[in-house]
Amino acid sequence: MTTPVLDDARAAYEELKGQGMRLDLTRGKPSAQQLDLANAMLGLPGSEDFRAADGTDTRNYQGLAGLAELRELVAPFLQVPAAQLIAFGNSSLELMHDTLVHALLSPLPGTEKRWADEERVVFLAPVPGYDRHFGVCERLGIELVPVPMTPDGPDMDVVDELVLDPAVKGIWCVPKYSNPDGAVYSDETVRRLAATPAAAPEFRIMWDNAYAVHHLTEDEVEIADVLALCAEAGHPDRAFVFGSTSKITLAGAGVAFLGSSTANVNWWLALTGKRTIGPDKTNHLRHVRFLRDADGLRAHMRKHREIIAPKFAAVDEILTREFADTPGVEWSAPKGGYFVTLTVPDGTATEIVRLAKEAGLALTPAGATHPYGEDPQDRTIRLAPTFPPLPEVRKAMEGVAVCVRLALAQRSPVQREANAERASAQQQ
Ligand SMILES: Cc1ncc(COP(=O)(O)O)c(C=O)c1O
Image (cartoon, rainbow, N blue to C red):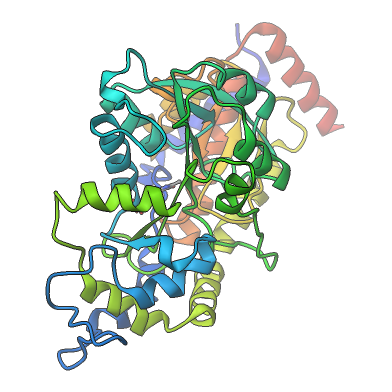
């Protein structure tokens, strides 16, 4: 059975397919224009300038914890004392991965037992969340248990309940401008995470502050200091803080950071010292020369904002125009970060992504925002508007709208009727 709404949606979709689009809204990558902002860095520090402020020859070995002046520059942004912050390679994901591998192979401070000798190791995964966090756990045999996200962070009542199981060893957190829903953890959430009554003494918060300085508005949101709150709550070793300059300078040639208690940092360095003699300190110096200081970093991030904020505005504008009155279709309006979460009526996300693919528009697979790729309600779609140029973002979002309309129109007759009624009401 067809209806005018379904016929119209099909016709619009056929037209979309006819355009032969080749667009991609999948990965949260900086655009070439953003990377251009850091081109001057490629000529730094220069062949005569390889000494750090303390005289360190950055060309040589040594300095496992990274260059002191870069750690000092970044420390306030990650809310970690510089002495407890490590500057390392080009990827914070790598540091997260290594931290979990280390914990599997060597007992963390606070426990005698390495995780490899535990029967079960479980991590809590706030959903929707970051697929690569889940990927690390899936690869290492760490079981993932979803926890629903709220606008203030993970649902802490659920967390407080789940951590009573000693197999639960940690939780993933993207506390500011979360991937993918843009949520910012409230101070209360951070306080509760610091104090949550975990049965496992070595319970760890993987505090991935990937978007610490990635504001999309004038309101440069701040979050509570997790290390300080953990210490206050009597759990000084509970949090590992991560961050990187991947989306500040160059995504493939940035610097990643790990910060934690002195005990955790020493544990991590002792183990990491077995796998490398030290990180690339000339890249650290290059970053210091380029960013200069805290104000330099902030000014640089404002240039990023000028490039990407209009793309997020375009996503919001098109979704508002198309779906402001459509029940079940909602989206986030993040104040920072790299993603928009589009929530669609239950059971339609996979179909929308399929339709988009057939029309030449790549969207992140439905389910990617959930452990094991399974979104039980099949309703979450992650949109990443930073990489394509603005006109392509607009075009892609017009395409997304067509696919959402068709998927909704194809649903049950009851829903089709509701859609038809709404459409005719709008025409009158
Ligand atoms: C939440 C989050 N953490 C980490 C990363 C990757 O960071 P890095 O490039 O430092 O490995 C990303 C990239 O999209 C991210 O969204």
